[in-house]
Image (cartoon, rainbow, N blue to C red; front, top):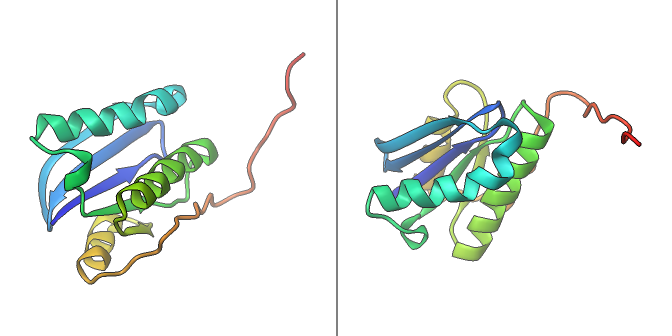
Length: 130
């Protein structure tokens, strides 16, 4: 079972491809302010580099927080869209063993259907500069 795990909670984003519980490939990159332009492309390239396509993904695991307000919001939007478009299960987990917990949920046919990030704090939003 091909499962993709995604963590966008920090400036260094990470994507890992698992076959059941075995890591096939992973990538970490400094996405920071470029997450919106790099996340989908990085997923696509990582899949292609491993002879896979979006249609081969059978489940998604997302680190739902706490973490960066913007990073989690962007990541959750991507995994929710992929899960909906590909008609595959998606689960959100947190803490140190988030990948292991999420993979177990997917293997046991769990599905959160939609991931809502848990930011950990109130968002710090500044006023627009004129």
